[in-house]
Length: 142
Image (cartoon, rainbow, N blue to C red; front, top):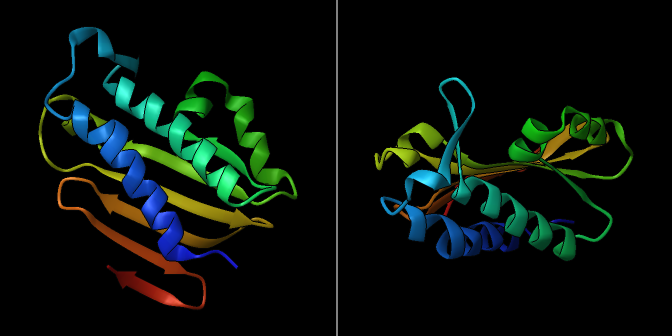
């Protein structure tokens, strides 16, 4: 069974190490467009890499399907059809706000097992608030 608080702590750890230090501190070469109007920053890519490593180390046998990996290679979505549990990561949801130094962004993680979302987390790095939910177990803040 997944420890929801432990996963929340990994998300928070990633936010502190990678996302928060770059908020309102990005250089022009650290922001690009994947598609017109769809931004990605160095915080997105590094947070996805760090969090993915932490999640797979904490829950062996899992794999990661991250937004930025999918943007680079659409076949990454094929992981969703495998038997291994899949972490789906949006490392900075609201990247346009983040890249422009505005509030209104979060980190989102879901765990999918056998095609069913069994748990999810959303973390607001600026206010250090995490909400998590587990299938059949309710949703909780804090």
